[in-house]
Length: 237
Image (cartoon, rainbow, N blue to C red; front, side):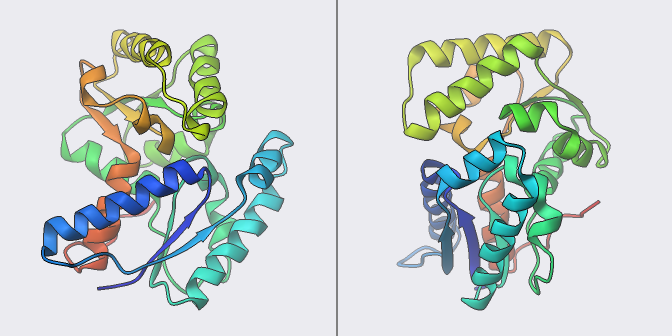
């Protein structure tokens, strides 16, 4: 079994979910007392959040690069960045890294294409929905990506940062997310990407009339499948 390098802490709520999912996947595939070989580097999210808010993406990239190199030094055979938003700095993160990064957008695209879906709605932080880094990566895989309008993007982003990263889950916010999802479907989305690790704490498959793609679960399962030699890395672009 390869050692999975989990780069987390953004937020720790989602990192805990990653840890749970990778171990459940190993148990499912290998049974018995087996668990995942992992190394976890957890950053202080307050520092990263400040860099996001201030547009200091280069600083964030350097910080995550240091973390990724530390994971490699600790024995990680590949790195899993446990956040959608910070894939904005994926190129900086991998600078000088001698092990591969399992890119979350690539694992998501592979799952969507396996369902023969080409037009998807994207939920995530305001950065992920509004900026091109994530949408363009998906588009390079041949996907047409829809995002909510500005008001709905504010709703989705606010729930993530004001509630979910603090472990707060409410029925009111779940209802608001369902309304946003419904509007994406009305706009032509054949599936919906839950493109933020915390979103899966709030909504699931039953909250959408079309297939949903929970990026955290997809990423964690792909990491285990690769670690156990059951799959290769998904095609990059």
